[in-house]
Length: 60
Image (cartoon, rainbow, N blue to C red):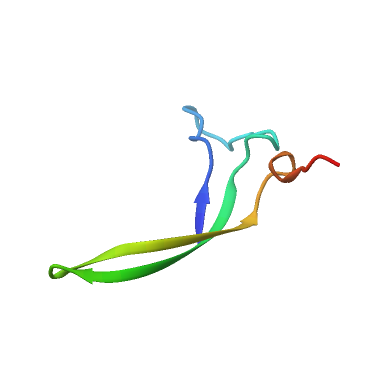
């Protein structure tokens, strides 16, 4: 799982983000390959778990 959002405000206190710029929670599924003595990510699948309402809106 990964969380992505805008950076936090400079002052202390909670970040107040409107729905259009709020964070996203995604599930990452990495496929690794052993290459020249090291493991590397060969392929990554990303599935959206939670996104702001505005980001998920689709035209009718």
